[in-house]
Image (cartoon, rainbow, N blue to C red; front, side, top):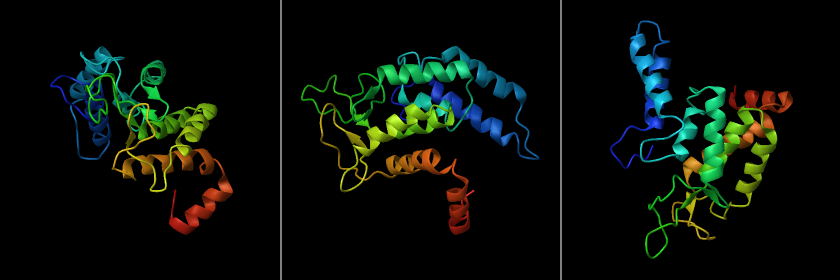
Length: 200
């Protein structure tokens, strides 16, 4: 998603494996099984790391949602690592020592806190049946909203957010998280939305 170093990333391998797996389901398209298996083997060799240089990265969440190509044990390990190493008060850092949007004068150890990461975690926990954790992340997100909308990121240990506010990526994931948590399991509300907007 944000590859800044030329190395093999689990999140990128996962994207390829997921894409090949899905396109292989289309009639008339045949992806050699060995290609998919090679990708899965590479992914399993890399996990739980994101890459040789990065132990944990926010982009690993993509292997759980939307790709859904890791097993239960791997999902738990990815979530444990992301939440332990990367979750902050106002978002989720992409990875340790990320200098992009670093607000510290010396340019070190002040990773930006990406708001969409909290919505991403809420979506995943809801899908895994962890309603309490999902609700916790949604509560955290609600506190981060601004008059302009949800921002891209907050600067580390600060109430200041960057100029990319509102950010469509953040807001769209927040909407999905809210929908999944509050609406998806309520048949009457779901039926009304389906009738009004054609939502499945």
